Amino acid sequence: MDIDSFFDLVEKALAGDASSQYELGNSFYEGNTVNKDYINAYSWLIKAAEQGNAQAQKIVGLCYFNGDGVEQDYKLALYWWTKSAEQGNAVALRNLGICYEYGYGVDKNYEEAIRLYNKSADLGNTRALVNLAYYYETVVLNLEKAIELYRKAAEQGDVEAQNNLGISYEVGKVVEKDLEKAIYWYTKAAEQGNDVAQYNLGLCYKNGKGINPNLEKAAMWFRKAAKQGNEGAIKKLSELNMK
Picture: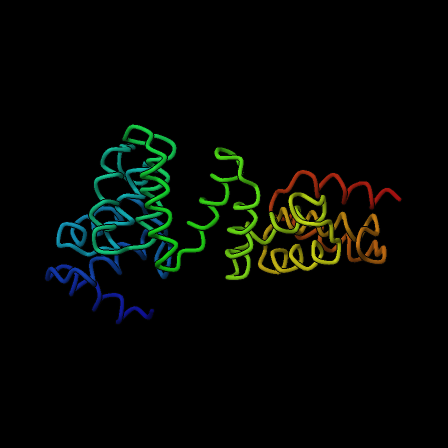
């Protein structure tokens, strides 16, 4: 966005245009074209949210949840996410599911959390599928259902699901052990920048697990993960450098 476009956006926002207020607030929130500034972000986003802008309501909820530019308040996060969800915002629906699953600003209610996750997933939110999968894996202990959901999310490009599916194939968790498939899913997630998958793929190359040993490729993936602060990768990279 050039300077003229930015000032045009500010002018429209000052005139009360909700879409412009949202766009300006989001720019400050994300640090796009302007320096990241949560206080300024909130001041514009709340104006748009109060006019019914669902995207702004979603981010105002995030501001309250994280304490970005405002005092942290889970109940107000819940309020604004509910407003956004009522307009069909898939991310807000998932965020509400998290609130109900873990009790942020509301009593825990697993049934309501599952309903919200499913509704969000039906609208195409793959992160909600991962939430559902994790719930079935850790609470219901239905690993078959969890794998089914992880696979569905992985096929839609979700990196966490891809890595989790890779782990399942590597260790033979519920699915039959298949190191080639493990490598396939680790690679999918690693290429999207997931540091855990990059570390796991590095281990496969280092140890020749499901693939011919290749220390250069192992080091490459460890290096990518290490740049993101992955402690395991930092340690393995150090070990390779000492040889």
